[in-house]
Length: 193
Image 1 (spheres, rainbow, N blue to C red):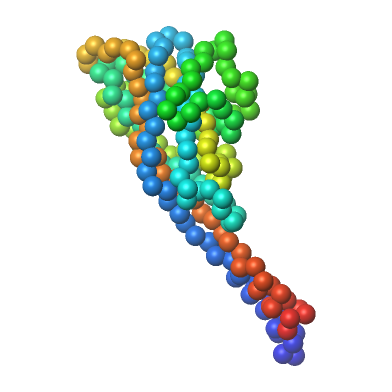
Image 2 (cartoon, rainbow, N blue to C red):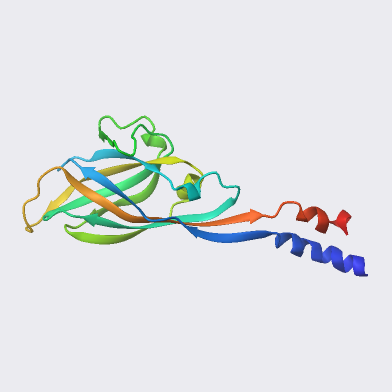
């Protein structure tokens, strides 16, 4: 009887042999140049992920990012969207610009992070990126963000000069990971009891 009771408890004990942990990365900021008024321009920027997200021996359960988008322009509303690529040519200190006519060959495989939206002049807009592709980014040393941006409206707040920029501030990755405790299942399994 006791052996049957222990055999019934084993699956419960095995499922408890892992730990889930929520981790937040330190805040990062990225500046995206805006160089076009009427036609979208793609800007590829390289982002080196913090060491806390690299070479992890864990299962990533979920990932999202929070950030604040700042449009410092005086009169121009900036329209922008973002895609994530695991391939790229930009470096953290040198973004690469593309037009609609010559997007990078890996553009088609880049996954949408943030759908297109407008950012009014001189505003700080909170944003949450909740994309399955973020889970795949965890563990990578570098990722590339391809931002499609242009000016979508002109207001009366002042005169802006090019180049403009869109600032992605306080980017924090929120990751939930699980780590199994290897070896315990042998002691708790049917042959171990």
